[in-house]
Image (cartoon, rainbow, N blue to C red):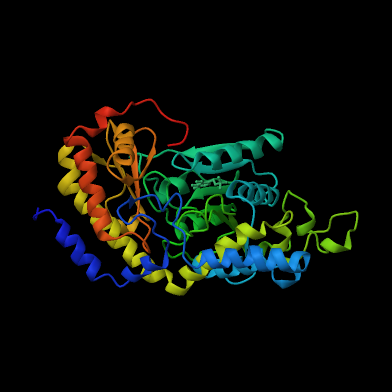
Length: 422
Ligand SMILES: Cc1ncc(COP(=O)(O)O)c(C=O)c1O
């Protein structure tokens, strides 16, 4: 093993980084804070501030109800189309609306209705629990005939495409997976798993919450049926920002949302007493879109689309690779283990490191050492590196402070008792 990279080496990488200037396009209130949580809540783009100000004062304040005629009404489709350029989705298939959880309910119920007579939903043990709760809830709503089959992980970090494929049969209605695992960051093989699901006659739903905005996606090319995701992580849409959904154009005639709201009706302002779904993706809308929340996302999506996902992924892989290099040099020797795949090609934008005192270390980092990661049970400290705002020197500092939290005993000052939000 070579010498461990020092701080100067990190600064040299920053000096050579073609995306270094992108950080200036964000509000950075405290330049000394090492923010490693852009995968939970992305930073505020500078452009969002005047845009929101404009929408509040000019559009809402001055235009009042006339605002609906100046782009509000079309906002879920317009922003969805722009986001679609980051998802590999042609126009007319993505809506920015509702939350990820609600969108998953909508597309899962729609997908199950497209596969009558089949009763198995296949997912894996690495999926985000909320997605599994949604599947359990859908099964209960449908009378308890459906069951959720969870494919296990052999190494706690990954589930192979072959293992997913082996779990499918002619009772599989839907394969529902999170593309980048929320703890380990492992990437599923979307093309292979989608093809395997289709080979047994099943449909796929991908949760892109940890993928969109940090790695290239090819929903159309992979022939994905449905997808959902959130926009407060790498998409920088703000706390509680609306989610999005994708419905492949091939399903627009047949797929029906289980929430028959007026915005999904074919003529919302016709006020007919019976529901007829709208043509196209609009049928997956439910009610009035949250215009202020959508206004916060639009400049952020615009910014990412303008920079281009290929350059973002290149920086992301350099950041995760650097963190793994530093893990070997600084963290493994003091008792950490790697909670992520080692090959950055198999990894999304975050790296997890594990330690038996992980919860206490996480507290020490936040309270004493000016680093904000997040903690995921039982022992994962998750380090999210948002490519537009995270510097290589931040990665170096985070690794060095993780090391110091252990060797200087900082973590011992914190209780292992969990708080409500970790
Ligand atoms: C992978 C994944 N799916 C679903 C959700 C739930 O999203 P929401 O709470 O916005 O409905 C999250 C939230 O972090 C997530 O990470």
